[in-house]
Image (cartoon, rainbow, N blue to C red; front, side, top):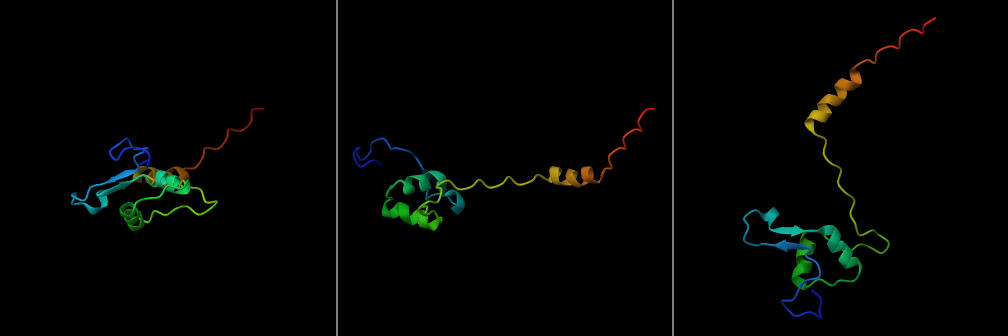
Length: 101
């Protein structure tokens, strides 16, 4: 929240949400970590409660010179792609026809 706006005013950007009533502990907190790291890098100060949630999930302010965006995790290979890869590699390539004379 911007300090200049009313208490229940419009927020600048929604970075996640927390629902303590959910039974699944992993689903209780949803965070947009890249955007949180961006705002921390430009000087945003989280409240004590928000800082406790960030610490719990390992979100830290990027160091000076460190990019705020985290690298994307590589997509896991599908079972069909890995099963087909060895079969295509083992297939011999056809020989080229002899040159015509």
